[in-house]
Structures are given as structure tokens and as C-alpha cells.
Image (cartoon, rainbow, N blue to C red):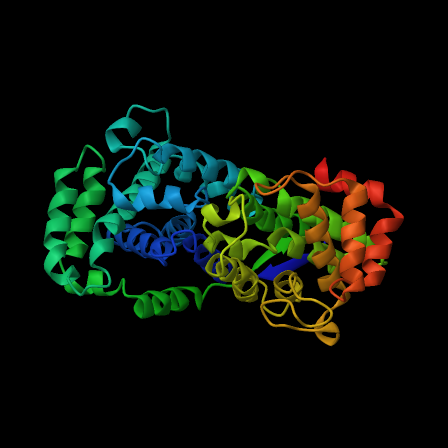
Length: 407
């Protein structure tokens, strides 16, 4: 089976940007947690491979958080009763993704108290790594009010003192001691500023060779993040996966095969990754959107395009995924591209997205019948918004596509 090189460091860094969109006001939370966890691991003289691994675990630690309301709870209080839910979800997502499955156990326990971890039948190595994530995550929660105010250099001694008071209770004493030693200098906190944080992550990744993944592993990576996106609302459950199935079948019907076919499926899985920025209040709204809400919704395809450019550099996946709301007459978004700039694969994913969305129940309407959906698609063809050949191809085997949309 052919292997495809992917810059895993760059991919994980880009994907944590997507996860950070959930916070909206807490962009780079995952990066700060990752860099702090790595710094503490280095202080403890962990092997280089362990330090790099904890960096990636830190960037992905909140992959179980899709909803902005849940994220707000995580950053507003040191402990809260529902924190374990996203740990369980995140661990399940990662365990199903072969390239990242080795991180699942520590993600599962990254909001568990140290005194509780000591009583659980968990390998000590995992126990310590999970607690390092917890420690770094809570440090970031404590520093976040001061990140954009210039007060961090006057407030960090109090943060260190508070963390030390929780040694042996919330956090492992050896981790707390290592943190206290490296954090008692201004440089530790100033390195959390956005431009320095991004620069440091680029520097770390500059010497890491590309990872070779086969197609199933690439799709598992894409499926991981499609699950995070679709979990934002019960009304979008499995939307991305079903769009990917429909798009793949349509591409096959047009004779597309090989690696190009696999890329169509991956683009379908990731076409809505930019929706992590959109509040579930907008996604679940039962009525019409306000102009401001519609503008927020419209930017998701641009965010998708930019995020995927970093993950799949040199591939058409960012274009095929990011252009799924463009139209043939050039009045779509975010680029207002017309026919000449829309590959067949873009047109396929656009049709697959609309077809599945209409077949799925939404807060503002019930599930639409196949007859209704086909009439709707045809009306969009007549107005110049969808490709007539793609809609005709779907119509030829409409029952199969409807099963893919709702099964």
C-alpha cells in the first residue's frame, strides 16, 4: 500500500488551531498548554521523544470539546463536575485514530486529581503524563485573565503559590516542583505571547521529518476531526461523515479513482472544520439568522480553507473542502468564485453537502423527503448555483444516495 508523507507536527499544530476556535476568546489555549507541558517535561529530563509527545498531547488535549458553552466552563473555574465528559469523548476519538491512539489514555485522565489517580489502576507513566496535562491546563486557566492586560508579570507569583498549595492533591509533587522552578522567571510567562508561541512551535517542528501514512491512517486523522465538528449539535451528528460517503460515491460515478478519490472523501470529512468557531446557539437556532449570525456562519468555509492549507500543503483538499459554498454564478462564499475556478470535485462536495443537510433533521425544519430534495437541487441548478451534471448523476441513483444520507 502506498504511503503518503505528511508533516505531522504542522498538521497537529494546524488542527489545534481548529480546536482553539471553539474558545473564540481563548485562541492558542492548546498551544500554551502544550508548550508549558513540554517545558516542565524538559525540566524533569524526560527523553526527547517523550517531550515531543507531550507537546502533541497538549495541543490535542481538548479534542473532546466541541461546544463553546462547555469550553467557557473549562476556562472559568479550577474544577467543575462535568469536566470528565470531554476527557472521555476525546479519548474515544483518539483511540479510533491509529496515528494518535497512543495519546488516548492520558487524554482520558487529564482532568483527574492526582490523589484520585493514585487510587486508579493506571500505569504510572500514563498517570504522570495525564497529570502534567492537567497541571498545564489549569496554569493556563489561572493566567488567562492576565494574558492581554500586561499584568502577568505582577500576578505570576500568586499563580505559582496557588499551584504549590495544591501539590499532592490536584497535582503530582514532582511536577509542581519542576513547574515552580522554571516559572519563577519572567521569560516563562512572556513566552506565552502569541508571536513567540507560534515562533517556538515552528522552531520545534523545523527539524522533525515527515511521517509516512497510508490512506486508511490519513482518513482516520480526518475522521477524528469530523467527529469533533459534528458533535457541536445533535442536529449535525455524522453530517461530515455522510457528506464524505455521498461525495465519494458521486466521484466514483464520474470515474474518479485512486488517490484523487481518497482526497475527495477526506475533503468531505473536513469540509466543515471551520464550524468549530461557530457557536452552537447559532447552529441550533430554530428561526432565521440575524445578519451578524449569518456573517459568523459564512466565515466557516474560509476558516476550513486556511486550516487545511497547513495540514495538506500542496494538495487540492483545502480547495475542494473550502469551496463547498461557492456557486457556478459566483455569488457564493467566501471567495465568490465562479465556474472557471470550481473543479468537478468542488461541485461534487457542494451537492453532497446540500443533499445530506436537507435529508437531516435541523432545528428549524424536519427531515425532507427525497422528492422534495431532488426538486430543491434542480431549482438550484436552474438558478446557476449547482452543477447540472452532478445533480443529474445523483438523480440517476437517488435512492442509494438517500440511504447514504440518512442511514
